[in-house]
Image (tube, rainbow, N blue to C red; front, top):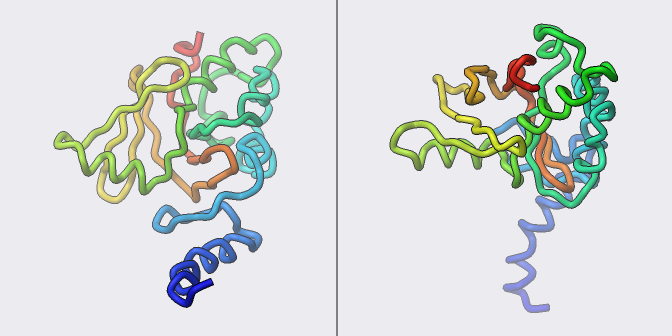
Length: 185
């Protein structure tokens, strides 16, 4: 291998090795994370902040989707976001509503915060819209340094915490539900 090629590959190897520790797949939104070897479903299951989301995912029988090829971006409400909403979407009787709510939090493609911020910056209006798996629109904008995501029914949340790059997509934590429980029907 030529000397130039070795030097060209050195940064790539260094970045790959940097993602091999306990924080693989994690980023604080300012850097690029190496993907973990876990799927979206496994990533959500392993993160204690998403226990309710995992229960809703299991109840709605959508775990196979997030174990699949993807890529998808999951805007993952924390347990606190579920507590603030009405109803127990993890209950068997709420299976259809839980599935509808989950589809409204998933967009096709792997979107990091850097991707979302770049899309907002490209738009002259300061907003960008993305279609969910529920065929609804999410609108992204900035308020100061905070990325705001709004559902087409008026529900709003902030991107919070650290995103996780999984093997088949990205988990973006949010502090609220992007669809109201009544609208998930």
